[in-house]
Image (cartoon, rainbow, N blue to C red):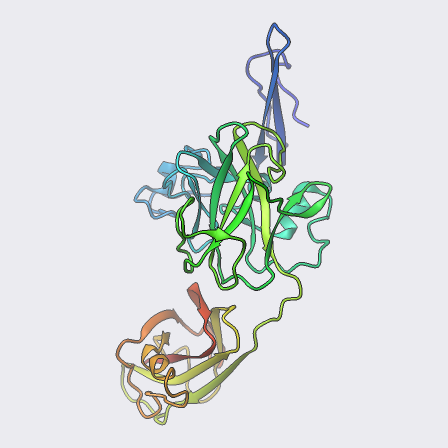
Length: 388
């Protein structure tokens, strides 16, 4: 509990945060002489320490140093300025890859309470974050699969009692029998209520790229294979978590599926014919073929285990992973074709997707992709090169 240093009658609420940790809710009630009353509240998070910010670091890549931007929140989206690129006020990052959800023009987006309390800098959260914030352990008590993440956000500057639209780009295509659910404290997960002022729509789009709110590309319902959803939510309506007509919509929800069949993925590898290399340079040493029976599989990395006479630490400068566009194009017409089986050179058009180094001889190396790659049905071809 927060205790004001100067009592409750002062115009400012002042407290000492020295021995405080966690989140606290501060409320304000204003009453006029005619008996009218209005209330407002704010959630405050008190961290153990502030991050170390440097003059030469620029975490958000906006050209301003971290120490100059500081931990202030100038646009009030609950993301510290040194992490926040501060684009349009109706955009909010939904994943670490930089993909944004978008609300209607002239509205603002900010993190929801559970995301803010968990110290997140994106609108995507976990079941554990919800359970810890509400302390009711109801979020994890379900039979759902949360394959697209959980979204926690607040839209402000809405006409009181009216509806607003929010677009969320998905990290994978919608599956059959998907539905949108919302979380209510003390109740758990509930189906999104649709009526004349509340609806769920979807559009084809692509990974990370969706039509803006209100676009005619959105059609009613969640359509299998689509990558974008649009929520229409009424201020104070059945899907507004705070249930209050207050010019804001509070939403904590997710796309869920029951009885998901997980993709079956197989991997084949082929070492190049030439296995002895002399001098310096980059050579293809391994061709990898992934085969998926579903378009719903996401690839975020590869892990290799080295073994043999080569000293991977002393003999190698770098190891690279390429997406082999040439073989992927050929595989559409001939699944057995492989343009690299007789060559150790990198095929023209190959895309470098990751680089790494072995930390130990005969050790393990992990390629981490900058963004998740959605595997199509069928084969995709990849190449591993060693630079000596």
